[in-house]
Length: 310
Image 1: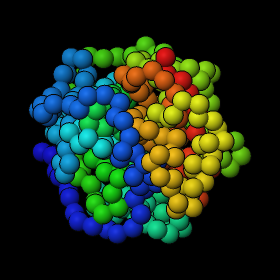
Image 2: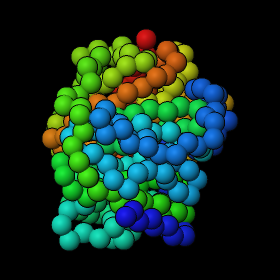
Image 3: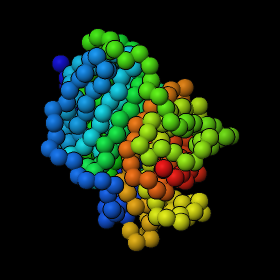
Image 4: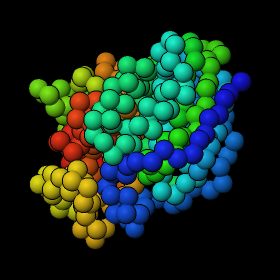
């Protein structure tokens, strides 16, 4: 039996409200056509595929999922996007405590955000997920052992919600025995105190499978957003500096022109395969999970990479 939790407002600054200045993205061109009515979530045991639909205040997912190599196909009915988080809570951690700390990562106090991020990292394993918008769906593949997991429908543009969450249990093995063939490699790497991206090539498949491996100290994401043609590294540094200072640029001046799409956080030592189907062009690859040391998204301190999708 699945459970669902939802609660009202915890004030503060949205963790993802940092992202691209929500106002800047709100007027941006979307990456595709809006999706149609939500279909019922299904599970294909033989193929190891699970469908997940993120709605404004709920999520649709089977109460039981397979274990093994499992692919989650994720979409949302919300045009401006949601982020699915897949976590496995450590023994003795309640979902209520977990969600309370997740809400605290939206605090206006960087020290409180950092402390909450440390608690989340201590209390769970990050196993990926998907950032999606109403115009863009994606999927990710993860190896699941038998047990209980939580899927969280995170509204990254709001500071006033504790997100809906569903508890799911594994019920049987799937027929998928290996990761999909991959086109690209994305590595989270630690350089001193700073996590960075390491990519063998900055040209990634627009429609392809990307293996993401976290060798850094803390959990990190691999999220893509389209940028204006000609955007430079200095443009992005200036942009993130404005975001960090709490002065996001107006939409006409923002280098970021789309909602995010990509892989939610994976813990250190973890890997996952992200599947994208995006228009070709220039993008920024970044991580926006709150850093447990600084209390800011790592992107603000340089964890971003300009890439070209081909």
